[in-house]
Length: 432
Image 1 (spheres, rainbow, N blue to C red):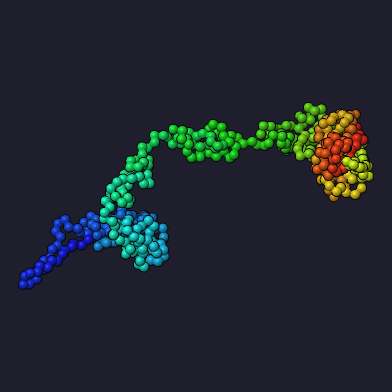
Image 2: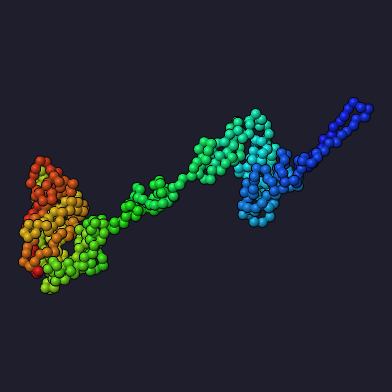
């Protein structure tokens, strides 16, 4: 502050005598670089150890006006370009505030007691609400306590004061700094919960090192995700069949597979019609268009069996060649099906593994079902017969009550729905 003087009036003599007393050497003075109690700044000394960032700027250096009563922000820089504009809610160079006091700035920060700072219409800090009515009975720097990982002074009224000791990022406990750990961070990785995490040299778990994408991990590496589900099949182009073994694809050459099974040639990898893929094989010696004689056969059961009666509604099952294999379908003798059906058929003459069992075949509102490809039907040799036995139950949901898929139509208990069966389907393989 400016040099202070006091005027004393001495009474009791004929003329009052005014004595002017001015501070001598050592008296507070603005410009000496020392912060006096009434000064907000003095040279490079700024009360509260403030810098440009406290006023909302990015960088720069604060200054002090000649009266030591106001901090200057002319040397501060912000991200805004162009001249300073008071009232744009952005603190520009030369302003202490704009619209409101900077965040984190209060009277206590400026050593002006307690209260809230405001912002004047001239973009200067409004300190009118600051009060120095602080309980003088509170003794400053009474004790130290841990706050935010460092030690701070607290007065006897337990109000936080200035930093007493930095704990160097190691934290504190009560009134002392904690000892920094000697454990090396990110020392090694280990599998936890299916992902890899960092562990320090003291084996304390840290942050995620690597996500294993739900495939799990083993030791310090992520496991390889399965490529497929066991039992899956697919075509690898025309000439190769892929089968899933232990979560990984195994490739089969169709030409080699057909030759090993005694066929002359391969027709390539193709869908079987039963939800999987296979190598289709054939023989060059079969020059005719038909592989079976006759190329198709049918069998009709004209009487439907119910638990307490029979009905004169019939169904017909037809078997026909499908390339080197066989296919089958079910048709209503007249009209259309009222429900979906359960259908089963197998070879009782040569190979009982040849056949199909479809628990819910789409027939509702249709005269005939879709064609169903028979499984395991490409291993017949010339002269062998397919002798088909079949069973149909409507509706499909009643199939289990009739011993489906190969239970015939014998009544046991009170099964629901209607059952048909037959065994007069015969086709002979006309070539190898």
